[in-house]
Amino acid sequence: MRQCFHRRAVLKALFTSVASTIILSKSRALAQGDPLPSWRDGKAKQSILDFVATVTREGSPGFVPVSQRVATFDNDGTLWCEQPMYVQVAFALDQVKARASEHPEWKKKQPFKAVLDGDMKALAATGERGLVEIIMATHADMSTDDFERVVMDWLSKARQPRFKRPYTDCVYKPMLELMTYLRANGFRTYIVSGGGIEFMRPWTERVYGIPPAQVVGSSIKTRFMLRRDIPILLRLPKTNFVDDGPGKPVGINEHIGQRPIAAFGNSDGDLQMLQWTTKGAATPCFALIVHHTDGEREYAYDRQSHVGRLDKALDAAKINNWTVVSMKDDWARIFPFE
Image 1: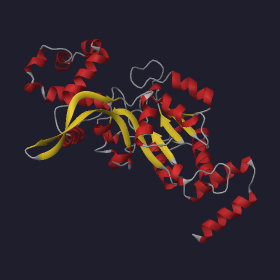
Image 2 (image 1 turned 60 degrees about the vertical axis):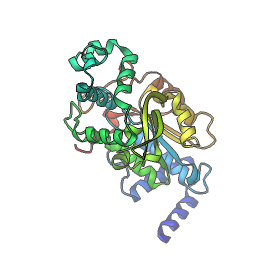
Image 3 (image 1 turned 135 degrees about the vertical axis):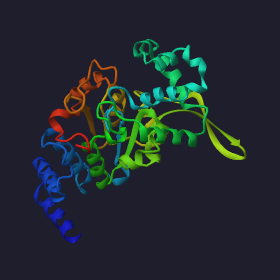
Image 4 (image 1 turned 90 degrees about the vertical axis):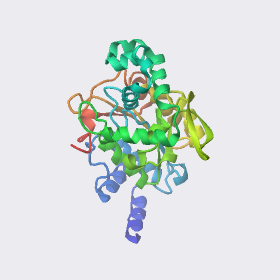
């Protein structure tokens, strides 16, 4: 510890220019071993190292106390694969099939009929309204504990259609390294996702190292009741909060209580979170967008995609000088199983 502290003091005394920030961040990365080995050397990786060096170097103008080092991450498309459909949508469709015997009326009622018939065109025609109806039918009228068991059972059996592996295997190795690196430098990492908060909380700590209390997401209403004299929270078929787009800064404020100094996303649904993090910030801040550009190793999509559309946020990144990561060019490795 003494040698490390002495070395830091010497470096601080020797290097005072803007260029020294780059040199110091590289030195730290080498001293730790490369903290981001799945990232190719380049502008994107260096921007992360430089930012962390700036906010953690005591005595520097950009130093940020540990208590203020909050980083927020979108989940779908930022931490795990969201194509060819959002994972929670795949879960909901499978639940319709699993529970169809309890609802014979679904065979003749849309949007359930489309799911049971495997008619994706008819399902798409029902639009957002149809999807909401499916979500409410498959996510409600059970206790929170029962819902957690259903989610975990499904995740243990379901497979991502292209990679034929559990969805929780299809997480991005570079982002896992990034979260570990930030936590090693005093950051608290949070998930801020449009996905269901109770869909994510049962597994995020095992997969990402993010405990349930640090997960912010969309939710449906719940009600306390006694069932056979046992207290439960019953999930109701009513929307409570949608943590997407402009809802993300609201969710951050309600759940976390302070602005992040770093935010990470991949789509237009993350735009307002990135703006909330960077615009008018009193401290150094950082915003990063994962751009899906690798159709060979994963998927390539952006402005025209119906899932994870990246259009307005991509334009905003250029205007605001946010870091845009090309999955094809900046990531040497995408998944842990590679």
